[in-house]
Image (tube, rainbow, N blue to C red; front, side, top):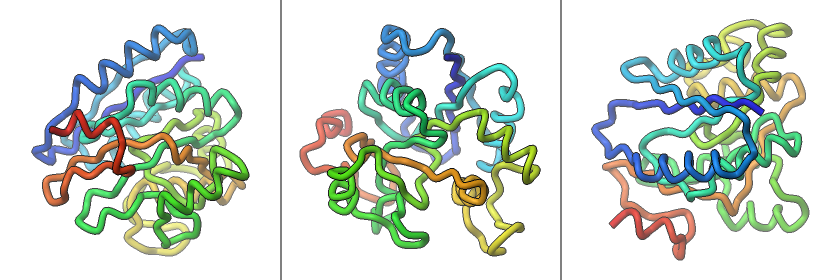
Length: 220
């Protein structure tokens, strides 16, 4: 399996957690899960343009894209677990984290427009894990290149847009736009509620998804 690991720098004046990323790379390369892993970065572009550029430039050479935003701290095995979910047959697989706003809702929705709680996701995971959801954020996920090719062939471009000009005509955000396209083809995202990350925005406190999360040690 060949993966491209896409890191998006949003110029938020945030810490960029290179140590977390390097631990992930080392574990992924040592795991034997992938035969080739390439890292690409973007900076200075709008987020929808950045994601479209990454996909279009790597569409023919890789099996999947791992999206890891740089303003987050991940468990050391995060990439390995994302790849394992992809290899288990999930075209969109993700971990969970809190949004970069003061309300700190999860950027995962069991129903469109209704942020889930970790307790709700945990309850669903007792029946099946990973959990099928309506929406989840793009910045902590893996997406199959086959899905991007299917969207391009059956719907067209772009894959990502901050305004939904196709369906609901709302200011939706680029990852919500993409998941809506995928759902129109019958493809839903799946999340592992036990795979969580710390999102570090300056306007909210550095609280992990789970109060006892060992990632908290990296936020001191």
